[in-house]
Structures are given as C-alpha cells and as structure tokens.
Image (cartoon, rainbow, N blue to C red; front, side, top):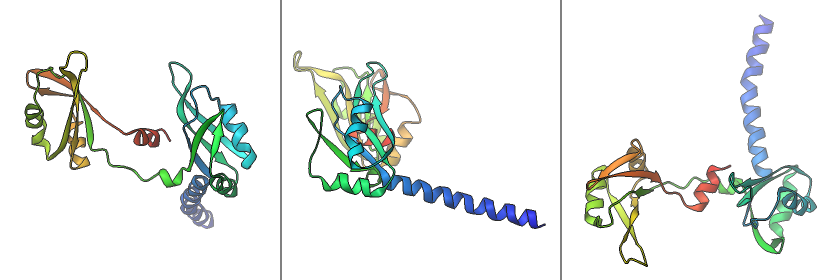
Length: 199
C-alpha cells in the first residue's frame, strides 16, 4: 500500500517538474536573427560565449546548400547571460549586424490567415478567385502578381482571409478548382511565422 501511494505521488509531481524545467529553459534561450549565409555554428558559439556559458547552440541550415538559413538559437546556462546580451545595443557577427531576441518573447503565435494558390491560368480574374474561395468565408484581400516582362498575370496568387479557421478548412484539400484549372493550395507564412515553426 505504501509503495502504491509513493508511486502515485511521484507520477503527479513529475509532469509539473518537467513543465517548470521547460519554462526555465525558455528563459535562457535566445533566437538569433540575421547571421550571414557563411556563418557557422562555431562562429555563433564563439561570439555568444563571452556573455556566459552556452549549453546548446543551433544554426538552421539549408539542407541542399548546407549554408545558414539566416537564423539560429542559443541556450545559455543562466538567465543572467540573456540579460547581458539584451543590454548590449548592437551585435555584429562576421561584420554583419545580428538581432538576438528572447525566444520566450517570440512564442506568441501569429494566426495564419493567408494562402498561396498555384497553377492559375494567366487570364483568371480576381472576381473568379473570390468566387472560388468566398464560399469558405470572408476574403480580406487578394494579391495577383504581374510578370514585368510579359505584362501578364503570373500563375499564382495570395489570398488573405478574415479568420484563421477558414484557412484550416481550405487546407483539408490540397487542390481546388479555380475556373478550369486544378490549383495547388499552400499555407503562406511570414518569415517570422516560419522561424517560430522551426523552434
């Protein structure tokens, strides 16, 4: 009986302990934006180690080129190190200004309300696009791009909706018919949203 009680107590406290540890790690983690394409993980670690001991350092790389994708993460051993980084007005790495931020402050999720529609016929009108997707809900804006050389519309567009839920409904199917074309639909994320997803 005593063993059973002990086991229950241990399992109940464990998740709380894990959550606390995770929250604490977030306090010590920094998002590093803007490092040059030739920046290495060693460069990142060497620069930020002067602010305190580093537990982990990650530089997001392009899987094809193997070069930096322009952002990374640094996890310090102590929160004071993060404060020191934030206290310094400007940071330069390999001659390029970089932008370190507290990773926790970036955790607020932006709603994804924009989609990419590929495979459009060049003569597809904005009205036809709104007609094709308006059935899902209110369209806030459409963005049709022109080819500067031919002065014709390019074969894709962006659509922004009023609500994120509408995008989720649309994404239940990868392809939608617009006019007589079968078009591929993808979620369109801002650079910041994409970077958050990589954390």
